Length: 232
Ligand code: IPE
Ligand code: IPE
Ligand code: MG
Image 1 (cartoon, rainbow, N blue to C red):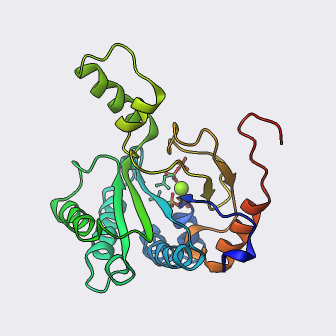
Image 2: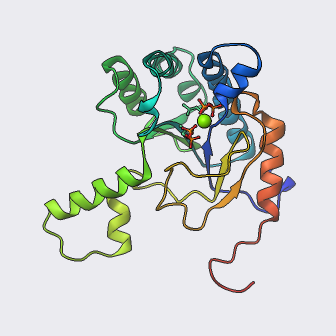
């Protein structure tokens, strides 16, 4: 399967955007878009397994998304909790390691406990690591890391030490960032980690994202020439 591409990303980060617009175009409430967005997550995890991707991250709720209506926010929490806690979930059935970045404190207890519980149950799986960014903001993550170092009395640190203080400690940097819906911005996602990521902005809204779009994205990535400041 992997022979289809001359190179594959090790870590794909998804900025899942366009759920609301997708629903609106169908005359449906925004939360219907989020519901279908969960199915797109499931399809994408399946595709990652199929094509041998080792890490994928989904931006599910940003530190700025608290600006949305209570109804929308609670709807998102309920969908996430149901998705993570269902008995036949993909993490257990396909041996996928579940992980999160961001601060869980403000989330409802049932969501937090299903997430933490599933992380514990899947912690030894190695095929694919799926990370959900929840109440996550790149700026917040960097400031928390700095405060942590200040509390320890550090006067000077290296980039390597700084990385260990980020929520993504232990995860490789994303090689490939895919933002759906046609918007071309990072919206406070993985600011530090994206220094050398490749970006791709398909027009499709997240609830419609499927294996066909995934394969197209992998083809785009395989043609990119990464130079990291050097010369090819
Ligand atoms: C992305 O879709 C999902 C979240 C941010 C939780 P949006 O809800 O932002 O959809 P649009 O951008 O309004 O269409
Ligand atoms: C980014 O999408 C956050 C997530 C995908 C969770 P937004 O829809 O919140 O971003 P903006 O507001 O359009 O920049
Ligand atoms: Mg949006």
